[in-house]
Image (cartoon, rainbow, N blue to C red):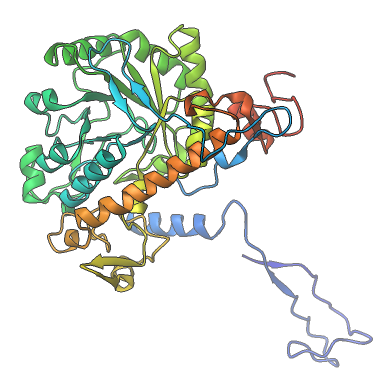
Length: 476
């Protein structure tokens, strides 16, 4: 706002400043000097929110994850080897990345080459071309992909060597025959971007094929339940898991996915219900569409969630027996390494995958050419690097769309190659850091290898503040 910071003069000045606003011989009060100063509580973003709410009476819906500044894995650093520890030579000494998930009850645990998996993103939120690209890249890298809401597409099953089938409250596209084709099942209780909220897919993305798979009317907004319809309390989770085990003859692992809120209590309930794997999705996790108030104001950061989940597993005496997957804002190989050091067995990535496929890129590929997509971003009222418009289905680079023309902008072969390169880079960075810490296996990274760069990160991650032995709130 405009703030007055000088009282008006009411008598002639001895040596008044020459100004267009004052007359030296006049007794008319001088206009005060004005200074632009933005309110912290009612800044431009808040004012814009209030004006939009006042005009439309609607909350904002968007995609991707939280944009507010939050503690992240960047607030931690590795204490790599020097004189007191010796590093491993990258070109001569191996660093194992093999990862096994689902050893508790499943007859056929999942064996992965790397501890980086692809998160659940549905056909509907993503195009069929994208789902195929995810499967191809995951297969090349020896990891898994996940169906998301809305069921399994033939393209995804054929392209994915290892496929996790999600069971969500909506039951959209849920098919027992497809369930039996899966290599694991993920029971979704919550999602990091919207813990306590149901799924959302706007009518623009309910194509004829999506509508048929989900048994929905074409072109009508889909809003699914926030909890499983046959679940009235925690004991029902046990019944649901046993139903899933029976239908798959106890062969495949059962994951339970939770949005990071009351992590310690939720993980214990999942373990008690019989989960083989627990997935914790922090508030930096993304989504195809939900209310912005969910994205920005619910859940806790991924950094804070990991130690709480590990503590719960230790208190239940199942740490190492029940595997822990962490998701929500994992972007780099350093993020992966830090999550493993804090106690995770693997990570799951979603938004990073979309960026690798061209999301928020200035260009899209058409054959061997790159075409400028700037005009298409402008039609959405945004620009590359700022776009969160996954919900209307008009993705300029053909990733989050069901439009027959737009989806051709992301061809499976091109996308799979880019995603494979991205995953390969993450693995190289992960093993580089592990070797520098003297580890011959990435799963040997431990909390003792980390230090925190801020007091907040030290308290959340439960590692010492750099240069001290102090963990705020834990050792004095």
